Image 1 (cartoon, rainbow, N blue to C red):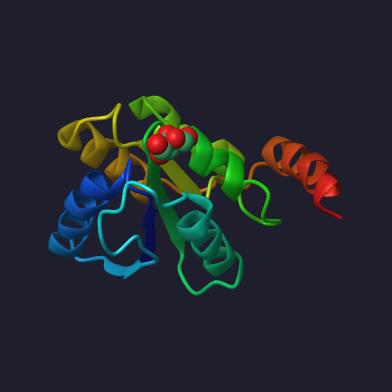
Image 2: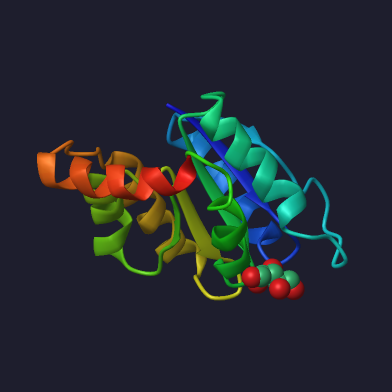
Length: 147
Ligand code: RB5
């Protein structure tokens, strides 16, 4: 599975940690920046390219980190075809994929410590969309807004 990463300065350190973790776990990783720590940078400049890469299927799933994870999720969900959520608990990390076909995990680099973040990432990446009729029906109602 190919995983895209993106972070602003608020998520830069956690992104670096997750990059190493993902490579060590056998994933192919594409890094959409930031490539250096710059406390003036803006999360849309990294999150939107990652979101577009998910839609173009250049990566299978994305992980975006900003300070809180809020800005990353707000920005990513503006890109049609992206289903991003700020996740802080294990249940939502896998249930968001199983029921809602989540394709981008957003984390708060100032909120979630690396060990917890790695567990959330594992839960997100190991989960699959169930495709059950009721979930398809709900997603289709969401997708109507993307037209
Ligand atoms: C940047 O200081 C911070 O606002 C950003 O990383 C993020 O937390 C926004 O949601």
